[in-house]
Length: 112
Image (cartoon, rainbow, N blue to C red; front, side, top):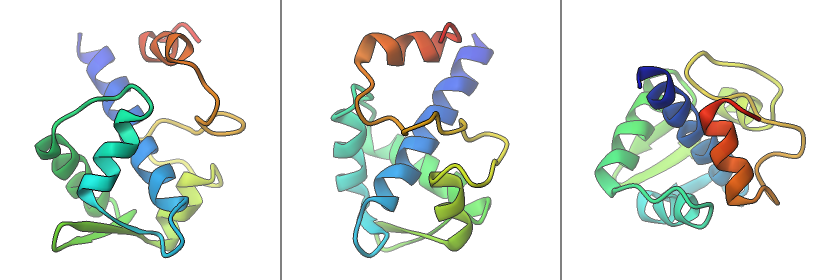
């Protein structure tokens, strides 16, 4: 079960970075990040979003304050697949855009 949880956390973290990378200022409120995850069938609570953003901040991938997150240059590199960080799922070619929920579920289970 831990392996699944680690993959799930890695996917959520990558999705958060990709959502921030798509924002014009690389900054977004946590609620918008939660909505972005939900639009890709990753429905999690706002507390979990805060926890994952705090983890990303500890890794130097985002700056987090006042209910918002902003990508750092290192975070941009990871979001675009130019760098890897343990605990963040590597970006597949083309990112997550266009990936159906069944393929997403396969990836979470380690089948895809």
